[in-house]
Length: 279
Ligand SMILES: [Zn+2]
Image (cartoon, rainbow, N blue to C red; front, side, top):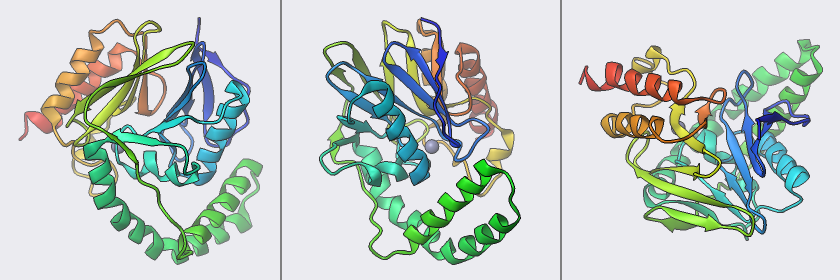
């Protein structure tokens, strides 16, 4: 089937059905900019990554319920970066959160530090957001700012708890549903120390997490904030080349719009040029 843009109201993402039961939430040109997905396998609903903002993750859950009529069976964290994992806390404790061993370890190490930074920034961010709200006329933007204010207030709350993955795997595996199955492929060290992707072989669709960006930017190399240096640029490049040669029609990047093999080759070239040749 052709990619179908679905009618779903969210200020955070556009929703697409890529093939029957395979959905992508794309936040290109919106905030928080990271993408996610959900898969209706028949008897299971699998969520691929969360979004950074609690309200965007709530929209993701709402969309998954609306279009699959299911509650999430599993959540998968493709890697540990906070923009893909902060929404974990929204999921009920009886929903297993799957990740690689490295993702779990890195999340455990970095999440508290990153979060401490958020907590310290909260008062200033609250002040800034409240001021911005006073002058805002666009209803979508007003909703976003109000949600942001709630989020910063939540973060200030000492009882605010993060949630780490709790089903830790060391290899690739498949989830076989009654209607469909997905291969979760362990890549190992590439963008982070333990990345995973979700591959639908028959449908020729692959959710790449942050192994793939629609538009990699040379400014990242010198930036002190934002996109970190890949854990293993050579393996990242080689994986991108390997996946570009597979029989796949649609690649879902961690950030940006839906991609084809062209962007994988561009990403491979980008890492080669800016991270491998120069080191
Ligand atoms: Zn990342």
